[in-house]
Amino acid sequence: MHIQNFKTFCDLVETQSFSKAARLNDVTQSAVSQQLKAMESHYDMLIIDRNQKKFRLTQQGTTLYKTFKEILSLYERLNCEIQEMRNIVSGSIQISTVNSIGLHELPPYIKSFMKEFPSVNARVEYRRANLVYEDVLHGTADIGLVAFPIKHKELTIIPFATDELIVAMNPEHPLAGKENISIQELKNVEFIAFEKDIPTRKATDEILRKADVEVSVVMEFDNVETVKRALEINAGVAIIPKNTVLNETSRGQLVTCRLDEGAHIRPLSLIHKKTRLLTPALRSFIEKMLHSQSGKDESNAEAA
Image (cartoon, rainbow, N blue to C red):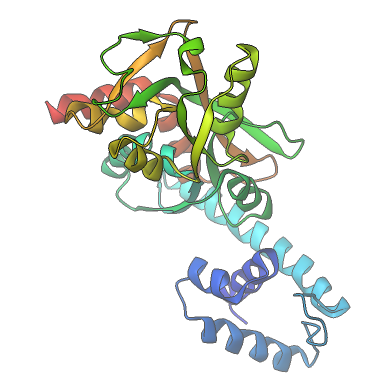
């Protein structure tokens, strides 16, 4: 048995998915199945209870999983110590994040990080907010990037940036042309919203609730890109993060205005499991994310 087999098996247990385990280890789904069968043959025991409809380990499989996790932890710690002794930053980083952060906040930091640490492979996966937390808690992601972070006893939360929630719309919309807008002006307006479990939707609902304003929700989407497409066809207005609409406003496809009632901040944070061993690559990436403003300034300077 090789150390990579242990990792593949642990990923399989934590994701309960052959396809996800395959993707995390850059192998085919059939290769994961073959590794499992080889492991059962090697140890002469059943590892997965195939009589169950849901993924379930046998008692022997649970013992193997716990032992393999300990071995992987020791192996990872050894690699960290060797890298630190040799002053090397390499390896891989698995990042789980929501679309709005992954597409509109993360790129300048990834670019700067990869320029400084070319030996590190950073993999980014776009997920719904609740799945980002699951990925980090289950160990399938090293770190997660979320908006409106939720406290959890097993997670470390590190703020790295803020954005502002603003009102966006088509230039032909009746409310277009205003620099500021009152929340009261949104009363009964046709509204493009995020789906109800999205953190920004929850924040939007709270803004409207406090102002005792009801809007007419005509469409709901699970990501900001489809919300913007609906705005472009003038299907209504939306409250969205300012940084996600900069390209569309610069091209004149959409216009935005701030809310009269003051800035409504959207906090962005990095999360990782408290028990996660922070490799030199992970520590370096977190440090890069914490220099948020300098990262943006660097990107803007290069663009200019």
